[in-house]
Length: 120
Image 1 (tube, helix red, strand yellow):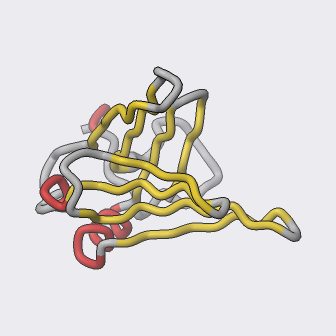
Image 2 (cartoon, rainbow, N blue to C red; image 1 turned 30 degrees about the vertical axis):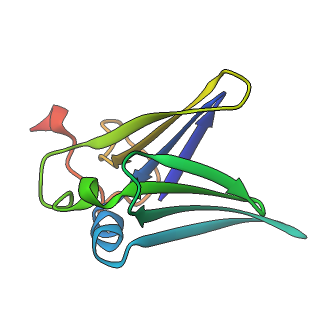
Image 3 (cartoon, rainbow, N blue to C red; image 1 turned 120 degrees about the vertical axis):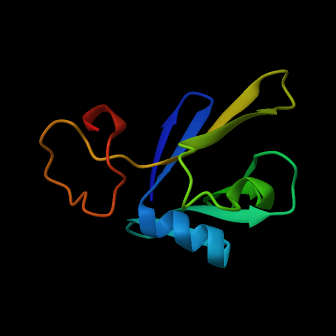
């Protein structure tokens, strides 16, 4: 699972295995060590009716509606997005997507990523 944070947006990208795991088990979590502290990010299946996020104890958790995840591993839906209002009048853009293989050469293992639709 990868995350990309830019301003008031957060995007989660999941491999094939991770999409299946989220659909079946309902939870994924990764951590990054910073020596004495850790940063964590998680995706959780939830009975909510739209995407929601929270940041507690150095962890971002994206809650994804159960209804969106049903069949996601097997269908052609790339992902889901939502905007969560913030107390200051702004909003947080949230995206969760299937991770596609890159079109250029990269040094990371992409064997579990989805085929890029631009190459099909």
